[in-house]
Image (tube, rainbow, N blue to C red):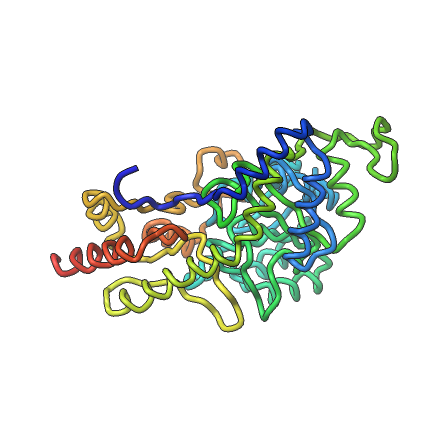
Length: 369
């Protein structure tokens, strides 16, 4: 690959060795390796249970079903995220209702959430997204949920290891979901995880991903509910265990790269990420904001520097949401963010020279204006 990429997964020799051991064992599908990965990831998040799934989307759908959310229910979420956040609500049979974002953090604005909740009687839950690796305002959102008797599902698919007041995300809501897609802070190739401190959610989720089987005891062919096959493979879990051990190393590198950007871009006419007090950002993406987004992206592309726009169209304006009545509302902060955000390379394999090249190219763009 030439140039500087926006993402560069780092698998490492240990993962190859573990995958080889699984291949030699012959137990390639769900098994003890997956159970060990689930337990290790749950401990990392400070949760009691982990349920591994095929990807972040199936984790979200499964968690919503385990929370007994479905037809006739509404769930408040953000319009500024990857479409899977809202799709999962629809796939579970419920209706996504959008609330606008905080323009500084790009995460759900609790005031906007409260306005929505007060206007509707069908809202049963909140689905905040820890976007780009920055936690949502869980303190306020949990207060709203408690006041209105709502369940909370954290979409932590971009936030492995992010922290609020010393506590990792993945344990604040009734459940949380993570993605292990190749570009995420850790990967299993494809994969997902549900974490929860609730025994009932863990049991229902584990059953749902395994054809609705009774997972209590040795009753493998008793199917107690309608389920699906969303099990993670042992091969993926072997990669995941290796990646989890390296996640602190990956996080430190991302944060160091972000700190360099913060310092070196501070005097340019753009906005760098805002991190509220008490929160630890893990920089799945390092996202700047500028009115000259498209011109800057083109300038960097001409210099073989990869960037990303996450996300160019808010979910409520996606064609697939034309038929969703709650998508008709306006969310000006989300819409403005979609026009201005640009993510820069921040991955752990970014060298000092590459980081300097990106910074010099951005500086030259503004000097050229």
